[in-house]
Length: 119
Image (cartoon, rainbow, N blue to C red; front, side):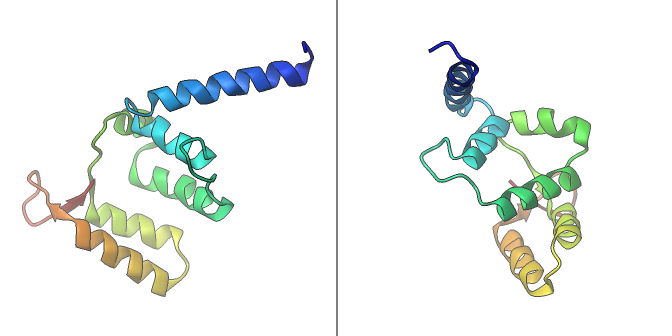
């Protein structure tokens, strides 16, 4: 009852419950909880997790990830998204499909005339 495994399980349970409660307040925590399978879904497969972890620092400065993802609404320019997709994916066919989907959901960026952004 008081062994290391029991204490670890108790801390993990508390960590999971806190993460579930904070999901509504923090996009970053919500993404983490989804990846772990704590939000009524299976954990992300390893390739999806690796893609996400490789992709994220290409979109945001590493020092800004926490601040940017703590906002409930995060906008990224389509141009930055295209560059990041090209750096992460090796399949040109998959790259083209993903860029096409991103551009389909993009909207005009009011800050930059002629640019698009995605949430």
